[in-house]
Length: 346
Image (cartoon, rainbow, N blue to C red):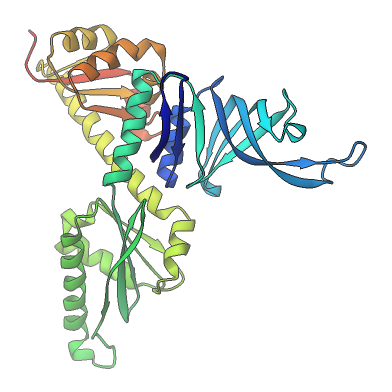
């Protein structure tokens, strides 16, 4: 995510999403009745003509949001609402319904003062764009090539050829194991937060078995997928099906699950290292006792959480926002908000 322009006096913020993950963050940032503005197209038709007739015209529209839908399958964020203003005016009648399709690299303006919770969501998006790296390894029985995927582009890392040949039965397994070790060593050096191994056939499955047996830590952040070849062109195929976004999302889910299990263990032991519920968490924040704040994204967007978020902001407390649609988020919703403590308060 990139901030193109920000004016707190108006207030307005212009953002440019750079990835599918950024569209997900925008879906958490934009709420019903928010005014948003972006480029779109509207069909201009002659009076009396059929609905589908006429020419599509480019327009710039500001709409009052009714619904927000993250359509991951089509790589779009769909914002539907009523037109408040637009240019050219003849193609933007006020009060008409319209859907803005927001895609990566397509700027959008949001007209509102961001709450403390919304500032946190935006901060997460900005940090995500800077730090998250995904490594894609495309492989078949002859070779493997690796690329680093970041929001600012794709960087080819290496291409390696396998010396393993089934014609040489005696040395086949030894050469294949050597090839797998070279790949695993290279993956470990990459420091990527998420790894996707993809390719045609069964070679990726054999490599998966090797990682399970020899590199458990590496295996924990690796997912496997199918693509039609182990050529550079298959990167587009993998990106188009959302595999990279899903792999990075799984890392977030793992973080949420780990925090949830830690909280449940603390509550079960009644060890005094955690608190939950708005009143208890507010009290701990006021005492500067909070080490880490946990909150559902739904509560984060509500007015109810604003004082909590303001207190957390004052102490620069790290915040983990649970995705309410995920497995961990659904279970954590019973707590709503919780905190791990720097020191016990009883």
